[in-house]
Every structure is written in structure tokens, then in C-alpha cells.
View 1 (cartoon, rainbow, N blue to C red):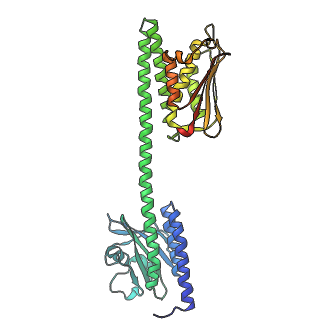
View 2: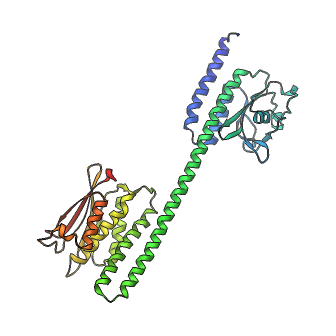
View 3: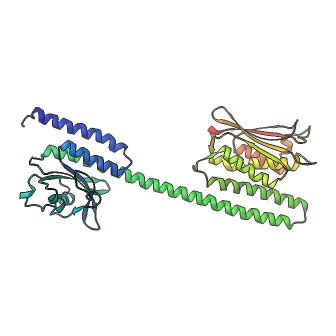
Length: 382
């Protein structure tokens, strides 16, 4: 085996350095077009060649389309094609899977010289297949108008590029399919939440109609309360399908929108909301919305028997993972002998305590100056 001259050694070391650096780019790339263009530029530099092109196989036409390249004239990249048959160098590499060296195209008997190469005066070419587990993508080719010799070491260099491109193409296509599946799943989830919201709005309308046609006062109040709870769930779903992130909900926007709807149903009561802009898991949205709706509705009904007054909804962060959610009024307060356990016999208190458990929170109740219900939620457990 002949020893390499110093210039030959430097040439091969340069190729290895270019190939190594391109490998890092191929792993990070998220734009196939830019990656292919970069590959042609680096291949031309590493081979000291005037031209390089990446060709994508188009099965329907049995041609290879130039999709990236360097050194070519205008209207070549994205437009020019070469035959994908065995009579063209690139087609032979594609059909056989074997690299093709042609150092004297003018004397070549195996292949015809494609028109594109003839127009640019190409005299020698090297073609390697770009392949991955999904199949044959196309061909990577270097060309030159000058005399010289492409050899087996050049094939190894070019095949290294082609292999990296094949892997990158496979990865990007897999990621694209995964992203498409995720986008579709998100669309379906949003559509489902939107439809649930509409269905619940219909149920709420039916409950409201039933309440208006019911003469029994106790039944009418029960139907009105049920309508309010259904509307609260519908409102949560209305917000969920509009969220940019289906896995999380912005607490400030969520509570403010909920309180705005409660103001519409309780004119004259100053229902205010104070909450930080922080993300909470979407799974907490429905029980949290029902919890606030239940307490605000109770305050509106019972806190001010002789008139209207304020109801304050507030959320305050406590440490990195906890938030304290409270609903407070300045009304008559709770009875001095108020017993939380005994009060659970009422439907409203059973709902409140049930939601507290569902949220995994600790409920604190006070009623000296108005009523205050505060729930501390550990978001890390959600």
C-alpha cells in the first residue's frame, strides 16, 4: 500500500474534519432544505470540486430532481432533472445502490452524459446513494469540468455525507409525522372540549327552562343551583379549548373569566378577582372552577340578606408549588356555632368539601367578619 504524500494526507484530514463537523449539524438540523444545501457546499469544498448537487427521486416520473446544489447556473436547483434510469450515472447509483465514479465522461460507454452536465461542461462525476430505513431518497453527486481523478477514498467521504443525510431525513420525517399526529390529537381534544361546552350549555338552558316552569320554590332553587354548576363546567371547557397549551391553564385569566361570568348572573354584587399569572395543570381547572362557582354563588345568596355587597376571589402563591385560593365576603358571616362537619349535611357544603378533596387541598373556614373559605392546593401533587 503506497504511502500518502503530505499534501494527500492533509487533503484527507480536511475531508474527515468537514465530515465530522457536518455530522453535528445533521443531528441538530430541523430544516431539510437547508441541511441538503449545506451538504452540497461542504462536499464541494471537501472534494475541491466545482459542482455538487443533491437529487431527490421522483417515482411518478422516474426522474431525479435537483433540490440543492452549488456551482450550477440559474434555474437549476428546484427545476432541473436527470434520468433515474440505468443509462445515467445518478440513475445507475440509485437503481443499483452502488457508488459510481466516472472520471472521463467524454469517453464513457456505460452511461450517457445528462444534458444538465453537458451544458456545464462536466467531465467527471461521482455519485453515491442517499438511503435510510424508509427507502432510497436520492443521490448525492459531485462534478468537475477539470481533469483529475475521483477515487475510492472520495467515495468513502461522499458516502459518509450521504449516510448522515439519510439518517437526518429519516429523523425529520419521523418527527414531522409525530408532530402531525400531535397536532391532530390537539385539534380533536379542542374540538371535543368545544362540543362538551356546547352540550353543557344546552343542558343548562333546559334546567333554566325547567326552573321557570316549576311552581315548587324548593325545586326551583335546586334546578337553578344545578344550572349554575353546569354553566360553571361549560365555562371551564370554553376556556380549555381556547388555551394555547392544553396541558396547563393560566390561573389569572381563568379566574377572571369565571368571575366575569358570575358578575353577569349576580348584578349589584361587586365580584372581584385577584390572581397571579401562573400555570396550573388543566386537570385542576374543572374542580377549581366549580369550587369558586359554588362559594361565590353561596355568598351571593346568603351573605347579604338585606342588599348587595362585595365578594372577593383571590389566589396567592405560597412557596414554589402551593397556591392559596380564597372566596371571602363582608356579609353576615357564619353562625357562631357553625360546625363544618355538621354543615356537610347540606348539598352545597358536601360539594365544597368534595371538591376540596378532589383538588387535594386543605380547607380553612372562618366567619367572624364575613365568611372566608380558603383552600391551600399543592400543585406538585396534581
